Image 1 (cartoon, rainbow, N blue to C red):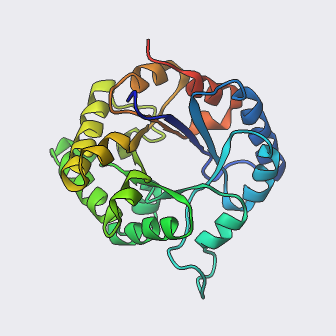
Image 2: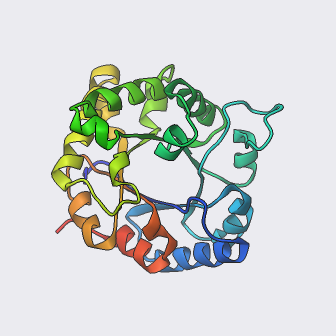
Length: 255
């Protein structure tokens, strides 16, 4: 893990839990990670449970994140949630362009970029998700796909805004499949992302930027992944629904 960058471990609960379960899980995560002082921990519950989870996290060091947001601050967008709404609930991080939003709901890269800019405008830290499908990887398009998503997602940002964005590299073929990119595969793409940021925004920005890995991260592979020089944390899916497993990932350190 990059020595100049603080590790960020985030748990994306996706469409799981109920209100009682969300409260209990948030409280359990806060308790299980309370002794960790060198890592930032985020839980990302469904939008309808943000307030309940936030209340359960009160007084802890665990931050609250949202799974999605609309780029407009208000308006006739039935079923959507805006940045100011999230901020009013104490949300600090928001996922932008998760692969399920791109591939299941058809969100375009430019629309994801609108979300990233809106997140910054409303005082939220965007977690820009990028990653290729298995078809892309097999065709040798990993870097071109990631570059396109990265460039569109960061378009129009200042250097300081880029530095304060989190990038999550999540190969689509490794999400919820049990397959994980090898540490070497993950590092290769993370290094490519950092180099692209360096070329566009300078070395200082690239060094400060945090890049997470997401894709079937578990307690038994977390330390090896986090041991790579350009991997600064993890965006955890299924394992984040168990407080003990999630805490083990947050506590994982390179061997």
